[in-house]
Image (cartoon, rainbow, N blue to C red; front, side):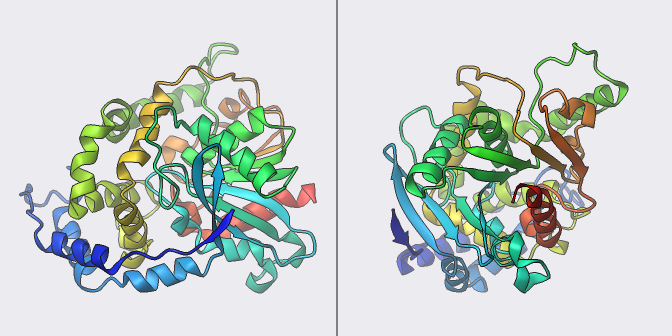
Amino acid sequence: MTPFQIAIPDAAIADLKARLARTRWPDAVDGAGWRYGADLEFLKALTAYWRDKFDWRAAEARLNALPQFLADIDGHQVHFVHAKGKGPHPLPLVISHGWPSSVAEFQKIIPLLTDPASHGGRAEDSFDVIAPSLPGFGFSARPTEAGMTSAAATRLWVKLMTETLGYGRFYAHGGDIGGGITNRLGRLYGEHVAAIHTMVAAPVADTSNPPASAAEKSWLKLVDAWEADEGAYGHQQRTRPETLAYGLNDSPAGLAAWIAEKWQSWSDCGGDVLSRFTMDELLTNISIYWFTETIASSVRMYFESAHAAPEPQPKIAVPARVYLTREEVERAPSEYVARSYTNFNYGLAPRGGHFMAAEEPELLAEDIRTWFRRFR
């Protein structure tokens, strides 16, 4: 375990600006907006800002204000934030991001969790926050051997928390891929994980026993419709990720389109992504993917997980808060959730979408504090 600071070379920043200046734009249907995918006019504005106004050094300094480390775990170099709590007895909390995100999503929420007394909360609700970069994402090393599934990442998290950092018992939170990791921590590692807070309901393979309720049938039909309209990215990443990666790793405009479209579509923004995030926030996350060249390794996790052997699926026995965002596709009915958890608390967020830690950090932090308060 060694301290880490982000330091992107000047030459890499200059290369990015030069590539952006040479972007060859496609045409688009008049008035298409976001209906066909990433909006052309928005992307032109975003990339112009990236080239001419975005200050990576300022973004880098904000990220470097967080205490960061690298650890070698089973031959994988894992990057993580380790921010100590300022309360009397901080709980160790590992928080896991998803795709297309990074630890930058947690910049606003980490201080709310580590130092709640300075942000309208109670000192006794503080956490030691550990925020790792998923393997092949951001500043964690890019795996070049097959098999880096979300299950493999979960095993790394257990070793990070127990062996590297010495937390014999800990707590977990996450959404998207990070939500799957959080559920898996609760399902398979109850000897170490005391309770979880997840924004993703664990998937259920069979809803025939007991028969699916009307609410479940309606929601599952919605999920199928979402997959048909929105799920092409996942199908591509599960089947031919490397073909996709050539263009995204070579073209910053292409990378920005692939990522920004998801931040627009999946956030609770009413179609206006800039109503929830600044261009600097969007570009900090996109720039991390660009400078670390991790778009290929990040999307490969979809392929690896889709082609892995089935995992054990016992019910999740540790206490779980299932706190679902405003994304309709994520709002599983409580009876569906009951199929996977034996001891759960169910809630629907009034605001916030897929990137909730960045969209609604105060709301999410308060829910996390409230849930884990009972375990102190």
